[in-house]
Length: 295
Length: 310
Image (cartoon, rainbow over all chains, first blue to last red; front, side):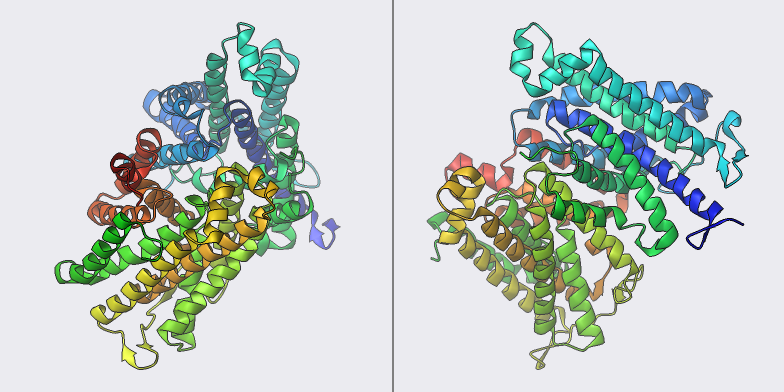
């Protein structure tokens, strides 16, 4: 068996793949948070709950309507995104003139409501969600065995990140979005409907979280708490990367997933805390974050 | 008295009277729980209400205080007052480390950093030996105060908790109304201006962060002695959320608000406990309603209507 640094290669690469899979979720989640923060100036604490809601929507579509994974991958983000639009119109839009803190408190309250309601109706033990038949099985790559589904998650997340990046950086909608992030009143004076853009941005960020939730459904068991602890790690990722840059969020997300995977190989006890330790080091060395601009 | 305004003096004596009479009517353990959490909420409020620093990781200090008090009282047989003090010291020490890191970033990042650091502390608590992992530290003896007076009876314990609570409450009030407290409020209102007036705002923020963490540690330590138990629940994130809710509901930046908020939240938990996850839902609804409809909280709203300072 091939050994690398005293570790069997399949184990090392297996954990590395798990790390990249986690990194894919970090990237999708912090990307959504960054887009929402850029436009709304609100840190969306409900992001974890909406991630969970994405997974539950996929489960519900399958069990109540017989709609399978592939349609769920499209429908769940749309449904949860529409729900996000509703949340923004009803609640979040009332806070734009207030301190950032209130946005965090309000979305935290929304997260509690969503998680509590789901726990009431579905309990805390997870619900199973099968891997779609096309993606079952695994590939033998020679140096490791790669389950097809995990490879697909990484691929889908990268594609989604690239699409998001292209939309924001290369299209006219993205240009308007970036302009409105810099100076909303000015953009509005050009006749662009900024409030509508804000609402749709929130919907899009939420849809990204739901997309991640559907991807996660077959890997983790679908349960009401799946987003709650996850969001705290994602916050640490965001502190490390800084919310100023789209590309920064993606790179930081994948990078930290890999760091976490490697830690699980070389120092398993530290795998739960390593991202927080990295955060501490970054705060000491570069307080503004790796890609952040000092304010 | 002590910089209290007249309505505050009245409210203070009302509170003291309530603390003295209440055990005749209500279950003392419930009242002690309310006082422990009220103190915790007051400590949290010292940060958010008077310096504008929103910490989302205060469970770390409360929970570590509980663990240290429980451990020193059980394993080393320390007397309760020393054990509680140790809890406060460790809480404050942890606050020094967290605060030193978190004040490097401002506003919303401050909240996220404190949250992440507290989560790290939680994971460490699941791994350390002395915390007892999932079981926590159980069967903590209340011991003898100063090695003399047994605290086994609930009323004896109640007296200790009441005295510590009122003393810490007055201490917080004193901090807020000292020249130091005035600088804190200046930082809350306009930090660049406070800096330009020659104050090292980071030093002030760190000092008050440590004070707040130490008092939270004392609150946690008392809680551990009252219930004889310190568990992972005390250091976990929902605890941080609860203390935020107490301060928000009662009124951030008012001296009595967090006490009222804590009493309401604990009562609510007691009555809703049989309904499982509805506690979480109700707390979420209270958050949303408070943020949207009355950001000043109950006491803040009352004070504003009556033009009092409470």
